[in-house]
Image 1 (tube, one colour):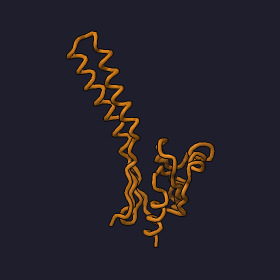
Image 2 (image 1 turned 180 degrees about the vertical axis):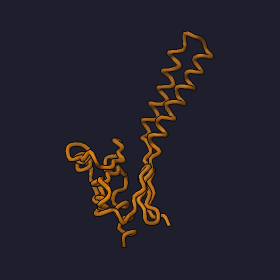
Image 3 (image 1 turned 30 degrees about the vertical axis):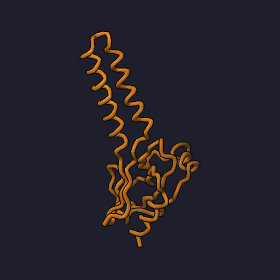
Image 4 (image 1 turned 90 degrees about the vertical axis):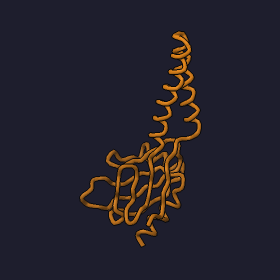
Length: 147
Protein backbone atom coordinates (compact mmCIF):
# COMPACT_ATOMS: atom_id res chain seq x y z
CA UNK A 1 0.00 0.00 0.00
CA UNK A 2 1.46 3.32 -1.04
CA UNK A 3 -0.05 6.48 0.33
CA UNK A 4 2.36 9.22 -0.79
CA UNK A 5 4.95 9.71 -3.51
CA UNK A 6 6.75 12.79 -4.77
CA UNK A 7 9.71 13.23 -7.09
CA UNK A 8 11.74 16.35 -6.40
CA UNK A 9 12.30 17.27 -10.03
CA UNK A 10 14.62 20.09 -11.00
CA UNK A 11 12.99 23.30 -12.27
CA UNK A 12 12.58 23.94 -16.00
CA UNK A 13 15.18 26.69 -15.92
CA UNK A 14 17.84 24.10 -15.06
CA UNK A 15 17.01 22.21 -18.25
CA UNK A 16 17.44 25.44 -20.22
CA UNK A 17 20.83 25.90 -18.56
CA UNK A 18 21.76 22.32 -19.55
CA UNK A 19 20.96 23.19 -23.16
CA UNK A 20 23.03 26.35 -22.91
CA UNK A 21 25.96 24.33 -21.57
CA UNK A 22 25.72 22.15 -24.69
CA UNK A 23 25.73 25.24 -26.90
CA UNK A 24 28.74 26.60 -25.00
CA UNK A 25 30.63 23.33 -25.56
CA UNK A 26 29.76 23.51 -29.25
CA UNK A 27 31.05 27.09 -29.51
CA UNK A 28 34.28 26.15 -27.72
CA UNK A 29 34.89 23.38 -30.25
CA UNK A 30 33.78 25.40 -33.31
CA UNK A 31 37.37 26.23 -34.40
CA UNK A 32 38.06 22.48 -34.69
CA UNK A 33 35.38 21.98 -37.34
CA UNK A 34 31.76 20.95 -37.71
CA UNK A 35 32.09 17.34 -36.42
CA UNK A 36 33.85 18.55 -33.25
CA UNK A 37 31.24 21.27 -32.78
CA UNK A 38 28.37 18.78 -33.11
CA UNK A 39 30.17 16.40 -30.75
CA UNK A 40 30.53 19.21 -28.23
CA UNK A 41 26.85 20.10 -28.56
CA UNK A 42 25.68 16.52 -28.07
CA UNK A 43 28.24 15.61 -25.42
CA UNK A 44 27.92 18.81 -23.39
CA UNK A 45 24.12 18.71 -23.50
CA UNK A 46 24.06 15.03 -22.54
CA UNK A 47 26.42 15.46 -19.57
CA UNK A 48 24.54 18.50 -18.29
CA UNK A 49 21.19 16.70 -18.72
CA UNK A 50 22.47 13.67 -16.78
CA UNK A 51 23.62 15.96 -13.95
CA UNK A 52 20.26 17.79 -13.80
CA UNK A 53 18.28 14.55 -14.03
CA UNK A 54 20.24 12.78 -11.30
CA UNK A 55 19.95 15.73 -8.92
CA UNK A 56 16.22 15.94 -9.60
CA UNK A 57 15.58 12.23 -9.20
CA UNK A 58 15.27 12.21 -5.41
CA UNK A 59 11.96 10.81 -4.24
CA UNK A 60 9.97 10.91 -1.03
CA UNK A 61 7.55 8.05 -0.43
CA UNK A 62 5.41 6.71 2.36
CA UNK A 63 5.08 3.02 1.61
CA UNK A 64 3.56 0.53 4.02
CA UNK A 65 4.96 1.48 7.40
CA UNK A 66 8.09 3.31 6.21
CA UNK A 67 9.12 6.76 5.09
CA UNK A 68 11.54 6.52 2.20
CA UNK A 69 13.39 9.75 1.47
CA UNK A 70 16.22 9.52 -1.02
CA UNK A 71 18.43 6.66 0.20
CA UNK A 72 17.01 6.69 3.74
CA UNK A 73 14.33 4.23 4.85
CA UNK A 74 12.87 5.15 8.23
CA UNK A 75 10.12 3.09 9.91
CA UNK A 76 7.16 5.26 10.84
CA UNK A 77 7.35 3.79 14.36
CA UNK A 78 10.72 5.61 14.77
CA UNK A 79 9.20 8.96 13.80
CA UNK A 80 7.74 11.57 16.09
CA UNK A 81 5.82 14.71 15.26
CA UNK A 82 5.86 15.98 11.68
CA UNK A 83 5.81 19.73 11.23
CA UNK A 84 4.86 21.60 8.05
CA UNK A 85 7.39 24.34 7.30
CA UNK A 86 6.38 27.32 5.19
CA UNK A 87 9.02 29.11 3.11
CA UNK A 88 10.27 31.26 6.00
CA UNK A 89 10.46 28.42 8.53
CA UNK A 90 12.04 26.09 5.97
CA UNK A 91 14.76 28.66 5.33
CA UNK A 92 15.39 28.97 9.07
CA UNK A 93 15.63 25.18 9.55
CA UNK A 94 18.10 24.78 6.69
CA UNK A 95 20.31 27.66 7.89
CA UNK A 96 20.64 28.96 11.46
CA UNK A 97 18.33 26.42 13.17
CA UNK A 98 19.89 23.41 11.40
CA UNK A 99 21.47 20.60 13.40
CA UNK A 100 24.51 19.00 11.76
CA UNK A 101 23.31 15.55 12.84
CA UNK A 102 19.98 15.90 11.01
CA UNK A 103 19.11 13.98 7.86
CA UNK A 104 18.40 16.54 5.16
CA UNK A 105 16.90 15.81 1.77
CA UNK A 106 17.33 19.40 0.74
CA UNK A 107 16.51 20.95 -2.60
CA UNK A 108 17.09 24.70 -2.61
CA UNK A 109 14.61 25.29 -5.41
CA UNK A 110 11.73 23.91 -3.29
CA UNK A 111 10.70 26.51 -0.75
CA UNK A 112 8.50 24.43 1.58
CA UNK A 113 9.49 21.45 3.69
CA UNK A 114 8.54 19.02 6.43
CA UNK A 115 10.53 18.49 9.61
CA UNK A 116 9.97 15.07 11.20
CA UNK A 117 11.37 14.22 14.62
CA UNK A 118 13.22 10.91 14.85
CA UNK A 119 12.43 9.29 18.20
CA UNK A 120 14.50 6.10 17.93
CA UNK A 121 16.87 6.19 20.95
CA UNK A 122 19.49 4.18 19.02
CA UNK A 123 19.60 6.77 16.23
CA UNK A 124 21.59 9.98 16.91
CA UNK A 125 19.71 11.79 14.13
CA UNK A 126 17.38 14.34 15.81
CA UNK A 127 15.11 14.97 12.84
CA UNK A 128 14.66 14.62 9.10
CA UNK A 129 14.29 17.76 7.00
CA UNK A 130 12.54 16.95 3.72
CA UNK A 131 12.04 19.51 0.96
CA UNK A 132 8.60 18.94 -0.51
CA UNK A 133 6.16 20.81 -2.70
CA UNK A 134 3.22 19.24 -0.84
CA UNK A 135 4.06 19.35 2.89
CA UNK A 136 0.46 19.01 4.09
CA UNK A 137 -0.06 15.83 2.06
CA UNK A 138 3.17 14.29 3.40
CA UNK A 139 2.25 15.06 7.02
CA UNK A 140 -1.25 13.65 6.44
CA UNK A 141 0.20 10.46 4.91
CA UNK A 142 2.50 9.97 7.90
CA UNK A 143 -0.40 10.54 10.28
CA UNK A 144 -2.54 8.03 8.36
CA UNK A 145 0.13 5.34 8.62
CA UNK A 146 0.58 6.03 12.34
CA UNK A 147 -3.19 5.73 12.97
